[in-house]
Length: 339
Image 1: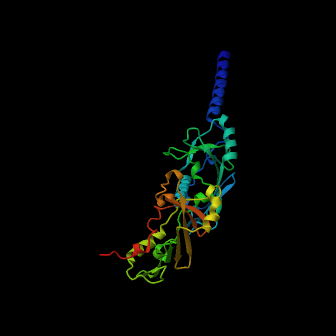
Image 2: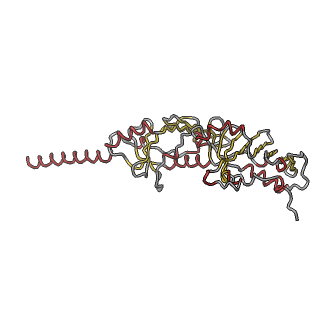
Image 3: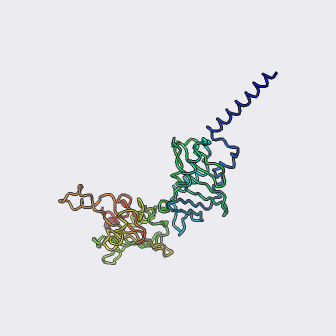
């Protein structure tokens, strides 16, 4: 009997040791519970504000309005980026617990590299989470809820990759890349000036959908053989203009913005709405790389694909000739085709 009791005690001790070792490997904790890894927000329609910040410091505040998602200052948010973020908040879930030995290092990484994400629903702060670095397998991302006990590996089921790059804290990366944010139906006037070719510069003036005129910038005369169809297509192209990327203070060319603004642009486009709003876009040629220049061909002196630009003489952006191909038209190209 005593021997059986001894075996029982030994068996219970072995079970306790095994349980402890398993707990060490799996990161088990007596404090763990669903409330500590409820990262997802299933009612994304109720989210009306998201603030993402990091330790750099950099912070992006996004707010849902009746006109769409906007940043502080009224700048519109990239539609693709906000849709990806909302989908991520809806679908992400805990992938696995962390081994106990990894928790201190992950906690340290979160404190140094983590992004703080504040989620507001119906005007109230509903959830705060910290987004860290990818897991070693790059199939998950370390996250922790504010007030939660431990960090966890988080993923989107069926998606092979990490999620931290979807939580963008740099405001300039959130800005919509629209050059002109107007509906074509609301455009009242377009002015395109080519300083080196005033004869091909023009104004398109809209008085009604059926009353649209082309005015020569040089003579100020109305062009009688103007094609209204080409004019409507031009207005539609103006409403769809986008830039490639924003030039920020850390970019080397940014230091030359004042000298660029003082120089002669390749073109100046002004678009005015029926409500009086005006957007001005200017483009400046970029010098070509020396090894690509053919000194017998002046056209090779400049980059054939890109140019620097400004929106309202404030935001400095990178433009593509291809993206502007439908508005870099001469006055002659807007006239009726000769039969």
